[in-house]
Length: 172
Image (cartoon, rainbow, N blue to C red; front, top):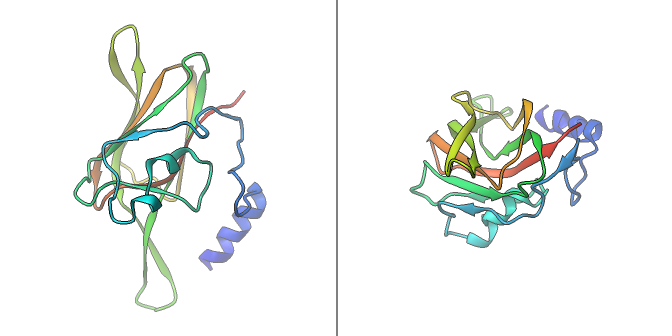
């Protein structure tokens, strides 16, 4: 059942294997090189921080085994505005007692998004949530922001955080 829903969603949104996600606006974070507080060292090439902004859903970053309060920073062009962020979190999956259904569990339970304010030399929180984001969280801001870097900071997680993609977008 979940697989059929995922296939239907992919068809509606134009998602295809090996292709970047639909932009739904100008993706200003595509292929920039983020920095993370940690990276899972077991199979580190599979969990590289560069996968946060590669536009793909088959790759992912994962924090180190003991870093449940991980964060990462994405450099941005300070002249380009954004007003939307899409986050695709990797979810753990296990079989339900009926041995048919799958139960998806978010690792990240609470998080915040900050932007760097150059003039004040400090971070400004522009979004915070203690509601798990599901497979995908789309945040639409009522106004535009410009910044040289954006930080995603995990405040509470039940396992090392893992993100398939975080897209910073400008939508007219």
